[in-house]
Length: 148
Image (tube, rainbow, N blue to C red):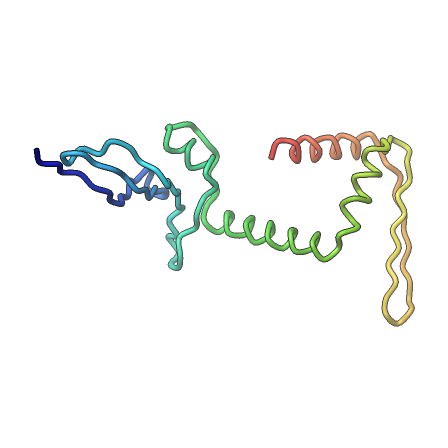
């Protein structure tokens, strides 16, 4: 008996701007299954293509409607995510503080005071009173965080 099979890699165009790469196993030249799927946004401005999060790629592969950002917007969001991760890594006490304040139930009418002290000793202080609109913003941010 002759066995003709193997493993290969493939590329599939999903849209004019998005493509998928994958590995596949074939038997008698028929691809049976794919794995290691990765999704990329083609950079039409020159330069490297950007890998998309797996869930977004799957939605595109299934043909679901999603709001696609252009490459420049996606690049800026990815850069902001990396910068914010670094910021919170450099300031490990900030997130636990914000979580404690959030858990205690900041309510309308609460006052937040912010103080900045320069190395020269000069100090800036301000405060803000939480409004109903602020609470709606906080809730929206909290819901976005929970949806990650």
